[in-house]
Length: 291
Image 1 (cartoon, rainbow, N blue to C red):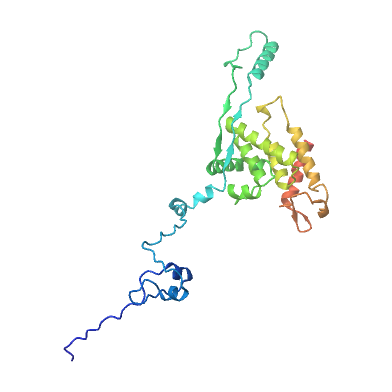
Image 2 (cartoon, one colour):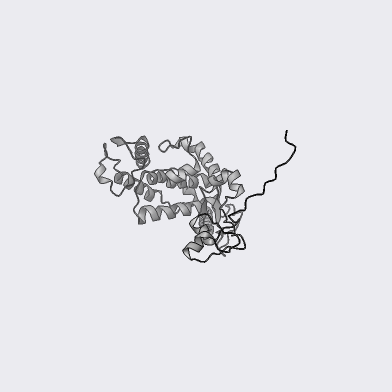
């Protein structure tokens, strides 16, 4: 048993705790000799040996906010957002006055007077609003309740607002417009947005697709003629839908692929024929045009 203790002197360190800039850049060992202020590499190369007195600042890393990482619904929320610009409500005072004059002429002077007076002073403007994912989902669920009354455009049970906004955006816009009829101000803004997109995409840019045809059919099927009975444009929209059927080749038994250079064929073909959705849309256009 050894009772003594061995004392060993630690070997002198030949490497400093900090490397010079030259060795740090080349990622090589920085070795200093005794008490010299220059390392071996800089001495051999004849370069200037510089050692920082302060540490370099740490690089910042891009970290996602905790709210997004912990809440997966936040990313889904960003998948859909519909900004509706301000819209001027139609002034119905003249229509009401004309209707009252017609009733007075038909029923005589004893006809009941109008309960409210509509002033021509000023125009009411609906402020800008944003249709959120929750708002759009509520409108989609409301539309599903009346969708069976028009079976020519079917919405899959697993369809969601984000998936429809990616695959069938115009059809989704038509659905949201038709479902918002219970809110007159929201419907007025949605209707303006629908007609704006319709004019730009189909009439000005000449876009043609099954998505546009299905959206038009939904809009026509629930066309709210009572909101503006003096300006019924449903026949114009119906003619546009019939033209789309012809441009998509749905009036032919077998699709001619050489005629679809300027047509978006998404969801239009299935093998050598048309898809069931395309056939349903054609039957819907025929049904409404024949009424």
